[in-house]
Image 1 (cartoon, rainbow, N blue to C red):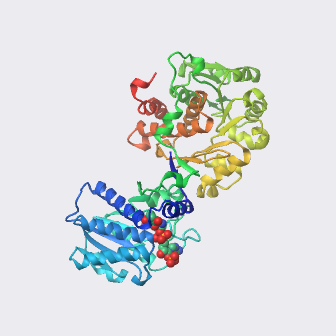
Image 2: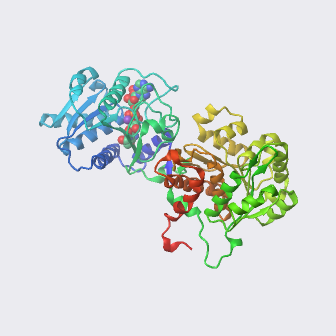
Image 3: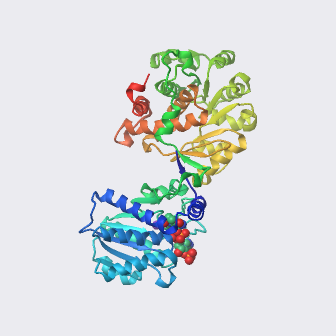
Length: 528
Ligand SMILES: NC(=O)C1=CN([C@@H]2O[C@H](COP(=O)(O)OP(=O)(O)OC[C@H]3O[C@@H](n4cnc5c(N)ncnc54)[C@H](OP(=O)(O)O)[C@@H]3O)[C@@H](O)[C@H]2O)[C@@H](O)CC1
Ligand SMILES: [K+]
């Protein structure tokens, strides 16, 4: 899994690469510029830029220095380059001064290069030029943002506004080097103004802020530049991105000699019926998702009056009633117990959750608490309810998490990663906090971020499907948090496969594409 870093971690790694590995700042910046060139070649689908115009807007730090290197490489490939350096030349130092001097020397040899020394000087020329790509090299990881929305002073603000205006007016592709200027790469909070990029080519590792607050909107498509900063310089990682390889590894294949009892036994305690309502759909979705995710055996505890309908919906599932003795007997048998989907919020449901979590048979198993079980937790008392669990995962969305943590939703939305991690550490549990990204935090160790999937998953029953998938993967052998991260990845992928039009996707469609999402990552011949 790819590490995701804070600004501080990235700066430490840059420094270590230069001081401990003796890689050299000039070489790192050369690689940074070359990697941006690679991405531009891929975007324009050309190896030479004759007839193409580029505008680079550069600041006075190393982000601007990356821009100088890129400008040189673009000129080498016959591009026409306009470079706006926003500051007086006298402010440049070291490697960046050298970078501009080299470019000035290109200018002396009739290269198609115009260097502007202020925004006002550039404006008339920029207004009459059609640019294929605008490059933002104003600020990177060196931005200091004291508070969200902080107003940036001139010339930073003028440079950023110029980039955004040309992009808006001409549709020119905007590429940010390392970080869109004005974005805090750790928090994802932005200054005013901030560059709205189509592509961000970030150095070495994706930054934490790209997944939070304004980060996703400002970055556009993310590309990683390989600049020879080895992974050991950012380890141990605080954050990791869940990927296909990790998801696949948690999906344990059935052995040729295996039986249903050895392939993951899931007990789902879900669904409810009262005089006023019946909630069977959530139970059906979670049980179907567990079976589609390869669980060997699924047993459902339901109000027994719903058994007939459930048998019709899922012939593979075994149904038991709501009697606590029957449930705990079945709990002995189960590998993973999922509690909560459509369970209801009345006193009876809350008492059931209390009794289940007081049973040492239940708490000795892998336990997933979702939906209405999460509603019951604060009523029971979180510490009391979770205290005995050996391995427990909570799967809240922001609203449920707000109730559990007593944090306002806005605070959670502004830093879901730390909120999830703090809660997991405080209560000694695993948390899967649904959102974009979905966050999987344990009491200790790195936080996992899953970015697969789209708004296709923002539909009723989506959480029930995900919890059923987690139940299956964990029952088959993965730890609860690994199963959660893997299931979140497959769930996102299944959502993608369900329809080309995200707005048309229902949870039933996602259930139907789970198998395709899992199957496509294995060679068919390896499936058993
Ligand atoms: N280190 C390496 O080896 C490598 C680094 N690399 C590259 O370097 C980048 C980091 O470079 P960096 O640290 O020089 O800072 P950078 O992002 O250019 O911007 C800082 C500039 O903004 C200014 N400024 C900041 N906040 C401000 C504010 N609120 N209001 C006003 N001004 C403000 C600040 O000015 P100051 O106020 O400090 O005088 C300074 O001029 C990184 O993102 C990557 O692209 C790669 O090449 C790989 C190798
Ligand atoms: K930038």
